[in-house]
Amino acid sequence: MGTRKTIQTQVLIIGAGATGTGVMRDLALRGVHCALVDRSDVNAGASGGNHGLLHSGGRYVSNDAHAAAECREEGDILKKLAPQCVDETGGYFSAVAGDDENFIADFKSHCEKCGIDCTEVDPAEAREQEPHLAEDTIAVYEVPDASVDPFKLSLENVAHAKLVNNSKYLRHTEVVRFEIENGRIRAAICRDTDSGEELRIEAEQYVNAAGAWAASVAAQAGASVDMLYSRGTLLVTQERLSSRVINRLRPPSDGDILVPGGTVSILGTTSVRVDDPADARPTVEEVDRNVEQGWPMMPILAHTRYIRAYAGVRPLVLVGDGEGDGRSVSRDFSLFDHEDANLSNFCTITGGKLTTYRVMAERCSDLVASRLGVSAPCLTATEPLATVNACEWTEPGRAPKIWARNPDADDPILCECEMVPASAIDEIMNDCSEFIPDPGLQALGLRSRIGKGSCQGSFCGMRIAAHLYDTGRFDSPGGLKNMQGFFAQRFKGLRPVLWETQLVQAELAEALHCGLLGLEQIEGEDD
Image (cartoon, rainbow, N blue to C red; front, top):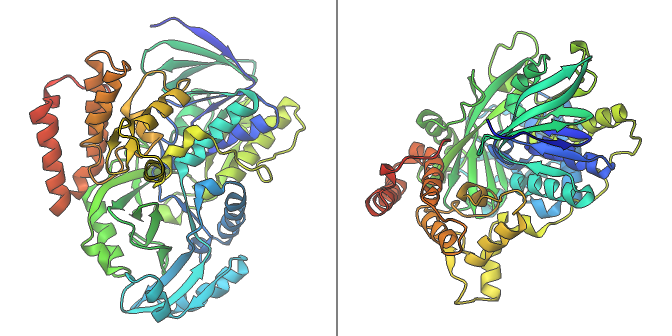
């Protein structure tokens, strides 16, 4: 066991997903200092394992009008205050021959009841705008869907909180136990998952925003949160296949949403009940189901190249007997004050959706502020989210634009798929030195586009590791282990889509990594 040091703050937030980072920024804007911890890194759970869809609310109009209206309101706020994170693509809901005609006929009136703009589009006109729509498309409605970059959003929440009042973010830091006395948590004992050193964090209030792990964190404090878990698998195409979000006009099911995300498109999502919140590995069966369900809406989905799959586990609050598909459970969020567990300075915020993360953070922060005696109001519905340079490298297409404006032969391109130069890696390392003092390809990938192109890190992983050795940031065999861990994470998403071109790409990567570097013969990093 390592040396224990102590940090004091007003609020400790556990979990650096969208909601946790949103609480951090909300409280910072009210003048409250926070420490945010995550046992992995920003958006390691459901916030990083979704479509990146900023819902108009159309998805929920037939079965959850409250969620639909809430999505509309929150979507409008994010488009206005965080435009750097949002691509206002618009969206189509399209039906094909054989789809439920009653559902189609009711859709527009359901949208109107929820205040969602909905315009009927002639199918032929829609196919001119989106040529990959099926020839037998029989009905199309346009809604104000958009895509949002969840990583940029969360990273900027953290960065803004630091700018406002020097609130702190500690990655790779997990809570191992709480010290509780007279109905109050006195301290959280945390562990650095890299070094094993213990850290004692003393706070006046403690917020559990641990997503799928919220129940286990609550249990550490002697509180109870009943949850169920639904795994969703998604696929990433090599190219962007549509300008707009394309939704199948039918009750929610598998493979019925295609979201443009920069230069690619993302198809999903399955819904499989799982017992373990860590069970977020995409399966071949779920990949097949998404493709089979998606291609009637857009036939190109049957034969396009998929460069990877990934999965996230939705944390859903268990209500009633919990029977049925995960989609039947409300996407509403819940705030637990845990006073029933005789705790006056601990709360849990969980459930909900990426689109509604801001209002989730607001409600949670209202409770925390009232307990602290802070009267300052929430500002996140009126204060623009600051753009921070260190977060800009997550933006698709930014690196090629910069390179084209000012090409420099002495600044080599390290990631050819996304055109990321060495200077970008150096900038991220310098700007994020507080968060990532230990260089790591995983941390760099989260804060940039490296590893996200068609080679999935096969080449850029080696080049960037070499650059880190050249610049002295890697200086031991640990760099090779770091590279091995990076490739292993990418391969989790490659394995379910290994057919045709992607299989050839994987065999090339194996030849490079094993034949050239012998990575399979070195002892790997602990994951």
